[in-house]
Image (cartoon, rainbow, N blue to C red; front, side, top):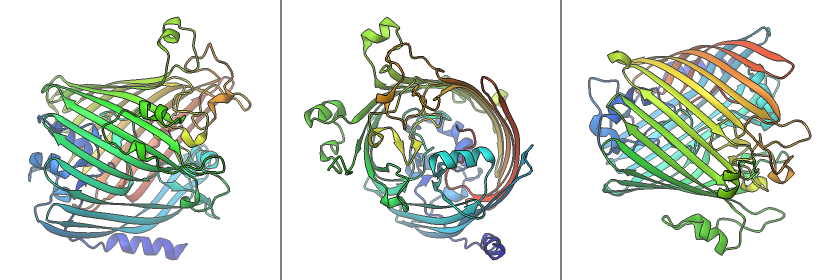
Length: 509
């Protein structure tokens, strides 16, 4: 263990700094927040499909800003860096310590600003806070990162990611990789989030006039406890497309559609469905034509700019519904939908770097679930949308201040969620078969074991070097869960040196 820690420190201190060759702004980057005002002051930048491509944001890069890691001024570049984490945390009132260790590396290549390659791998062995360990025991996965296996220290997990990106011209670009995607303008997304662990995908972007079409064909995994390696778990597949239309200088409207279907298992001799490969079709008619019972969802994403600094946004996700049942207001179980409203204000009161966000999310019971786990809207026991799954309402507020390499974030989250009792299904867990539902009618948000969730977090992050993803993070968080007959209240503090490859999340269920 001591040799492992020493090896991690040495690699962090002696990083190989060459030239950065990544073709997009990573989802976990601190720069996403500092970029936000500049992105929204421009016309014809589609901000809802992430990660943001360098070719789309290059015209707003300024040498006076902290942009060096993502500037591709040279046509040929190569970059390598060790990645990983060293961190310690304290949970109160528990005397136990959290200890995170991990080491790996990643490499990036850029050839003529047209062909990019990006690959990375890291291995971790860590102990966690109690709520994190409880989640791992339930889901067998470390939140957002990888499959967990028990060790003497706590849990071992691997993080592997990478992509090959080809920019054909100003209209088309293509990417094949193992990573994450995000659709929306909020802190959360009800359409496609970066909450789940990485997955394999093929992605195509098409930009014509005021339109941007994003197509994603993904290979997800259905977790089965008897399997050991990630690749041994049964395949499930997804096809998504998102059409974003810049209607005016202030208004953008996006239409989203996805379908999830199970691969081959003991009951189903099916793999990738080639009928879903067409990038412009509607999935529901195809689903009917091939006689399947796949899980189709449709969604709407809207963004409206009041000024270069202030914008509002919203989403609507619809899994299943009948208009007659909605009008009846009888709580029919299959009226499955969710919605989001948000407001973002950059440079609050003209204070440079001070940004504020307020957001509301709500998802009805049974949304994202299906009759079989192979078709639910999840990947390896994690939601592909909101981390709370379904049957909840949430209000959150985020205040950040950024100055070059430094970022301070204050975040508060309040949620009301209904949980499933041991023997009944009230639609709280998308990984539970909806055929086991407790009732067809009278369903409402918060039903089941009602829980109030409170989280307040203060976090300071500092980017160590221009050419590196390495950051120092110091944080403190209070987390309270109020049940019907009990209250669980804890305080957490942590200090870590880590690579910000993907966005980390501590406010999950």
